[in-house]
Length: 307
View 1 (cartoon, rainbow, N blue to C red):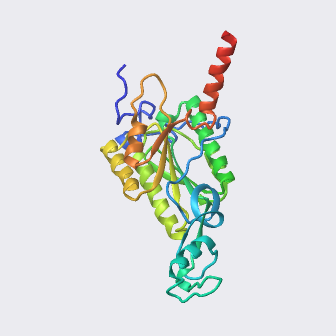
View 2: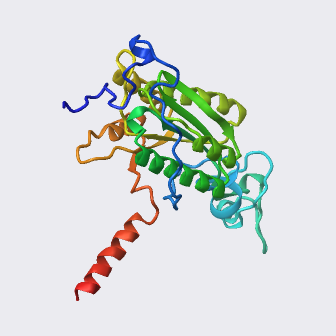
View 3: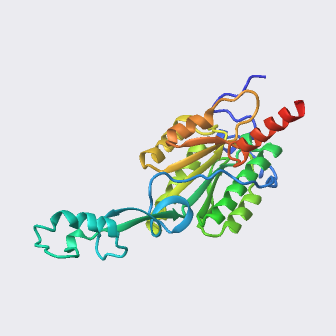
């Protein structure tokens, strides 16, 4: 009863395509599990300031929104920042021969108001559907979390995409789209089982983002990897996954790893993956918007009953 090591997948089929042994059709594949009850999630956003389509997720420069500063206009002046323009012109009044009321303003004094609002992003889900994630109760919770994030993406006017990996490779279950309903439908029918080709999932996601950047360059992506962090199958799966993750870090892509590892003994592999991606890691419990507030209510309630 040895504990499974990194590189081994206890839930993978005994006969897999990757080890060269015969495999009957559908071996190692489990029936699709229904998603758990959706919940309100914490806001995940892309760092920095974007210039994408209007939405409700990440900070962005916009034509509408609160004024945050001023700059020299690039091209046509659209929103004059009056105070900044006056401040730029004031020191030059004597040299410009001003002798009466009013201000002598030249084109170089004009300042464009910079405004900040919110943009919609491309939220690309990279979901581990391997055997190590396939326990019925666990996969239901994972699907419930992804469904919750999809509903949040709809409210924030994001585009979404879905990449899944299991068995011997990765698939684009849904190319980037504005249809959250389509993503939810694909998620509901997602089968599970087999080994965990984590590197293949990350590389497929990287390719999806490369193509989408050509189509919609202003829309910044947020990659949400849903996994327990295991990497199995093929030669050197852990090293390959690390190299694939570092591609994201090198490109400065925003990412979050939803850590699905459960049980009393945890290997911390999802947290390590988040570090290689250059992103953050959250557990399924931490993803809930009310997780901390709920804890406070429980403690207060216990204290009142004890009193």
